Image 1 (tube, rainbow, N blue to C red):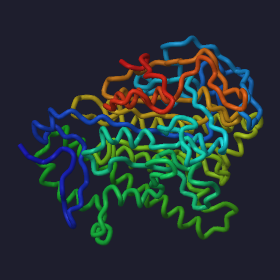
Image 2 (image 1 turned 180 degrees about the vertical axis):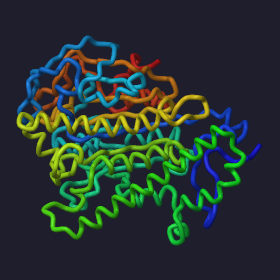
Image 3 (image 1 turned 90 degrees about the vertical axis):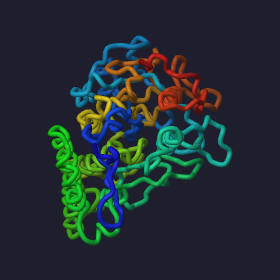
Length: 464
């Protein structure tokens, strides 16, 4: 039996390392060692169109734009508790992994007056600060959940956390609060990777490899002796893994060539506005999944796009020219069909990554998706109403079998945003703090704390 670690092997010039997927041929220790628990968050900006996302709201009134979080008239009155999962039009892309996802509705956050609604919904989505508890910043912002969880499950990985963003624009229209969900502490942002090539080099490259030959050629050369000792199924898995690395490289080359050509064309918008969004998002997602698969990290955040960034983007399968998500959200009545398509487009990217995880077998016979909590969510319930309640939340994966899947967990009888009373924003009666979900995830990941931000307890209905 070989003594090669299932997580990585050293190779080539400069001691660079490329982590390997689990291979049963790499020794008994590799077979018996349980795979690590992992967490990842997939953040979608500007909320969703409620009638396409939430069960029971298909015929709800299309709200007009408001900036003061007025109450919605929409109220599906779905009974509280666990129910069968209904894939609404926006959720249809999840059909292949339906049994491994859970829809959670009725989750609220408190808006703290004094900052922009979009900036706070993004920067404080994962925050551990109780509202009105931070005095040195107008934001209720402290160390975010990803970094707290990494203290428990990230210590033995090369990267304790990884932050990915799909905002490649360099026109800094807004502050960092609109464009980051991961924070080391109050106003101390965890910088995200936005350029696929730079992300690839950070995860897999060395200066020597970049100077002389690409990393995949070098790894394959060193891996030949290893491959001869693998069983047939592991050889197939090994080949699939390096084919995926090759695919990442080719896709990076394609986008870079496209960007280079666009730079020579006179355009009304920045070059980045004309890069295909789906390809870009999936490429960054492939990098994230590979990092989670191979043990480079156990904790990752993934921001699909920035909040309130009016620079247009090219949603290549939807529209023939770049469009502004934020701009359309302010006139939902006019752009309702386009916004519904955009919500489904974002869900397709989430589903692509969930399916990719579900096709990766791990040492305990389960898949990567089974051994992770992969959360889809937004800091707004609806982009037209700027509501901080009834947030769209989906969990994929069961955290190693610790969470229920294939269900709809409704936590509130009522829908709608936080009404204003005596100058303060109050939770709707019956709503559940989003922090309760974060506390539940922290518990599953091994943290011992009794409270998280304004949590009132864990979500027992979510636990298997």
